[in-house]
Image (cartoon, rainbow, N blue to C red; front, side, top):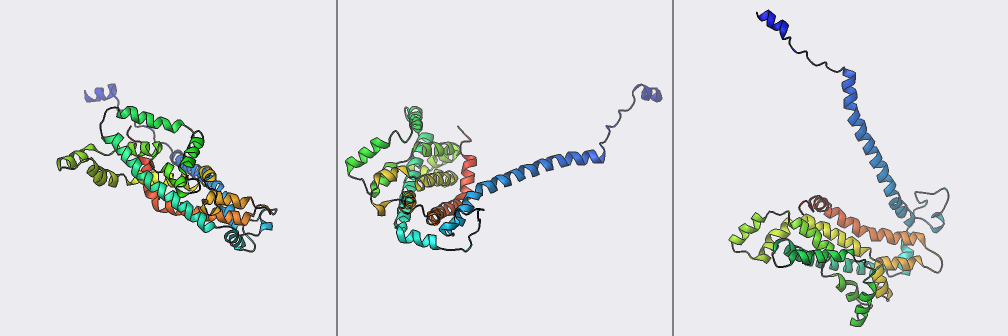
Length: 302
């Protein structure tokens, strides 16, 4: 009887195992794909770094070597004459101080005021909150060139032309972008932490200062890098509100160096560009961990 059942219901056949060469080919496919992607990214990174390498190399060259053909990637000989001419024919120390003062002041103030506004829009309930927030975001669609002339007239009326007030005050009180960025991050913080703090008697400002800000370090670092970069490289506004050479910021000062009556001194100009790059690289190096984390986490919750 059992033999008849076996004849009627044969055992299922085992699936055929692929040959070793087929399995090896299947494993090699993803590996080759990853190698191709990494190779492409390496080539792309090198192409992006070439202008930076050329800038640094040019700052150590003689003037006649800059446009030599074929191009010389390494100076021969290495010289600091470009930097010496830069410091001798321009007050670059003043320009560097002005840029640091303006960028650091605006960055610190924007972090404070943008975080306060973001906390209000994210956690405080009041009538018309969402409407006001959308109207505030709508200001991001207005090009800065549209408000350039009204801003200049206002600064002139206040008597702030050619002063540090003109460079800093119009930008101290936060921005729509910074408020939006921090609001999105604040909304990812669990509300249970605030409820527990309220049970202990904490008010809005205590919650903001002791709970929200310590947890928001990645977002604050991200916004700080963005704001510092923007105002460190800002050119148009300092150009129109500052007339004294000693009060110029570094981008405007380097533009003055490039308009020399004897032609552009490329080694000196590239030396100034290298000097302007050092603070940016330093800040990004120390804030990189928070910066990457803030970019990853910001905006996960609408």
